[in-house]
Image (cartoon, rainbow, N blue to C red; front, side):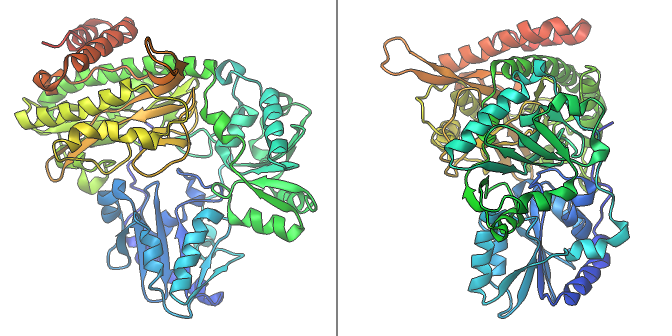
Length: 604
């Protein structure tokens, strides 16, 4: 099974590892050290060799940070990991604080005056580093780049080896466009940005541009590597030779040169006198420092692969449709199990997550999960991104709710879906809250909007039914999703936080409003949807974008209070269920198919 439950770390890490890190700090004359979760590639999910925060603290969440001073230390995590961070980190060694609302920067503003706080320039983007520099400056302290990371120094021989998973071609029948065509497009974008070349450090951009996939990172098929792409579309790809498969050189073609990672420093130095595009939000400060020292002119601009990667082509969209139908059948088998067998056996969250994965495995097409499954029973479901860890695992409970959020990585697409299910007979209040969330979900699924509209502008639509009842939720409404790449992909998102990126044709986003009653249960409904081309509306004056639904799996009709739905909302649910039955039904048989037919019947 691919599911992981974070049992490789424990709270004793802090007591054992903090002294070693402080000793390494002292050797370098440091009074403090920043320990971000991100690695040299700014990855969300990390190979074990790069998970410095987990080694130091025990915390294995995908978003967090650490800071160490000579007399105190802190770990910062966002709201997704409230329970997990307290289960994994020793509070006697670390303050456990929120990452949100500039939590790390605020903590650094209280650093000792005159302190020298080290940071590894390979692990911080210039954009992220800027706010930390301002915070340290307010404290009268200074940030100092380090050549050798004290965590790496303290980790020593115990540190795992860097991953060497083979890098393989991602066939054009899935990619929808050849690498040569993509490189020509990116070369033109580099010229239009006034640059001679671009340095790419995001593995997702490299995977997309060269039509390759790897296995260096759990949950995302990424090859850890870097590339320099010239304005003529030729490229140098810096890849560990141990990852190079026999077919890879021929797949890449003569215009792409494969080189060892050790050659990257010299390659950057040779860009002296050239204009080089680098993304200050995705590439680490080390690249900017190196290029400027070499005498290159740095052009700070968005990674030129970001938007083309986000706007899926017709082949990728069709692949996503097929992946979601396949995944929907697996999810439907799981929902049938939850509504029948599990109602009697009341399994725990670990068993629930493993059962869902077993149905996805049974498709024969699953390459990996797209993230660790969130299975929250009762009060754990009220933690928006709870993940089962040993100390907190609960069983399903009669009279409560079960929230399950999971997804799969398939060659033709990446899935992410959340369903909330009643355990036993739901209460009137549970039905009311579920239906308010559903109304917001429907509003986002059916909205039409003009070109130039951002997800920030749409976010309130999903919240409005809850706002009118004096309620809200504290996470975004939607994130971008890749094509057999990251389940979290920018730059598009739907959230309260301002975001200037318009939603463009072919972008895939989640639609996931929720409600969380602390200490009791949580509700979230999530499907993925793709932005459709702008089309005229009868009687209208401007063409409008919309969303096509990609995810198909039934909603728990026991939780729908039909009296709270408008006629249009009710019609949407009936149409969605009819389409679910039409698309997913042919992949099922026996009891599961009969259950789906009943689950997708028109609302009464």
